Every structure is written in structure tokens, then in C-alpha cells.
Length: 212
Image 1 (cartoon, rainbow, N blue to C red):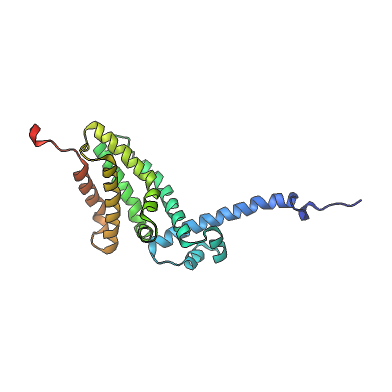
Image 2: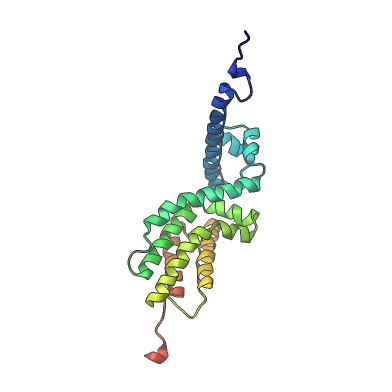
């Protein structure tokens, strides 16, 4: 009678056991690459793929297996950073209290994230299509839009400007602040205050002089 060693047969018990291990190894490698790339891009805008692989503790072949180009990796790192930002933005409680106060908290939380990774976003602005870069920020900007809409209904924010333009103003000034900090034109320690003062001044409702 001939016996068959299932460990040697495709689809046998050995293969069934190794597949989950391979998936787990791949997931660990991807997580290590994303974490390392987030740090590397945030510290050095021209970091190489080789340096990222070294920081992640993987080989170049493994890196390129999961992320076949720098652009693909950069997009994945952006999504990774923005996913991490969700908890920070949740902590700002944009649905609590007066809309102007909530916007101030949300702006400071947004700058906390953008300021930490401003060099990453500098690379993204340089290497990614602007429309694609904006789409990466859609989840965060959806929070801003909802808050501005609430504030308009409460009479806290302007209604004479299109809502989507107001959201674009927030998005653009956040990134302009990051650019100015990177260029040394704006001190990092005062960026959050400058952003909040500028945007609240631009977005808050004002009394109509004709009604006074």
C-alpha cells in the first residue's frame, strides 16, 4: 500500500498551513514598509527606495514586490498617514459646541498631523497629480465641510461664499502653511495660531453694515 505525504502534495495540509504564514509575513512586511516610509518621507524628501527598504528591515525585492514604484508607495504612505489621523481628528470633537470653537479645534488637530508630516506632503505635492492628492484628503475635508455647513446653519459662518470654496480655502491654507514652515518663512511654533486666526477671519459671518 502506498502512502502519500500531504506535506509534499500541492494543496495538502502542509500547503494549507504555509499559505496563512505567507500572508501573515506579507502583512508584517507591508506594515513595516509603510511605517518606515512614513518616517523616512517625513524626515527627508529625497529619500531613496533603498533607504526605505533598509529602514523597514526588508530587501529591495520585497519592497518592490509590494510597492512596484515610488509613486505607488507614496500614495500608500499618504493613505497610511491619513488613516492614522482619523483618531486625532475624532479627538477634536467637531460635532461638539459652537461651530467656530469646533473649527478652531479641528484646525489645530489638522495642523498637528500636517505639521508632523509636512515634508511627506511636500513630496506628495511635488510628485503626485494635484487632483489625486486632493482625493487622498477627501475624508478629512468631509469633516471640514460638515462642520462649515453646520456653522452656516447656525449663523456662525459666511453664506455668501460657495461651501466647496470655503473647504478649498481650508485645504489650501493648511498646505500653504506647511510650505512656509518648510521654507523657513513661518515659525512652526506659531503656525497653528496663524492658521486659526486667518481662517476664522475669512470664514466667520460678519454683521452687514446696512443692518447696523
